Length: 260
Image 1 (cartoon, one colour):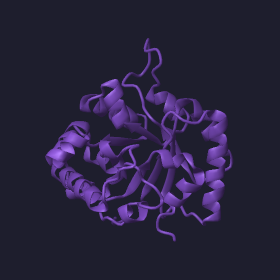
Image 2 (image 1 turned 90 degrees about the horizontal axis):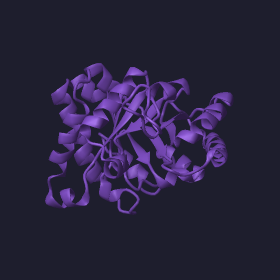
Image 3 (image 1 turned 30 degrees about the horizontal axis):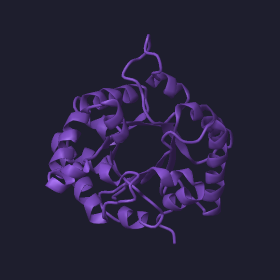
Image 4 (image 1 turned 60 degrees about the vertical axis):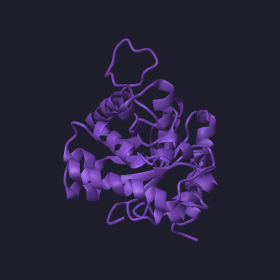
């Protein structure tokens, strides 16, 4: 993991209204404090629905909680007649640190391809936020044994036109689609195989220094019971956590993966 600070980010997806969000983020902060959490050892973040961001921001900033927060998507447009869209400027004004782009559910249900994901990542970067760029394969590709080549093709597309400096500061999340919300989980070796290949490809596209700096997460049915083994892999720098992040105690245990 070199000198990369792990990022454990909880993606709430379409769960928790703003009242529920307030309770969850407060309990998460209290639980982490009880567990002697240190943010320089592992960074905790919550990726929340748009309607929760203002409440989460107010609580985290008001109480100076050591938790980052962010959004689950962003528009490719800056402003205008795009009903239902949320711009990068709107998110930046709410002090979002992270924005997830290209999550497999956005790709599957909203037809987002690598070009759209790339455009969204550029909007996030231009607004001085950090994109968490998602890549990953479906089960049929995994069974064919072409998953590494497929994911590296995605990497080529989503990082196109970015500078080495931009890539060094962003986050890539490898999420095997077959392991999301299914209870199935890639083995630590599975996670390392693809995350290591991603880091190698970043080095090929940019340089070794960029590859050494970029943080690469694993996402897909991460729980407190399996996170330590996944995080022990040299090229895994965190986790993008789904359902388990809705339970603040369970998510705190995931954040504190290196503690018994």
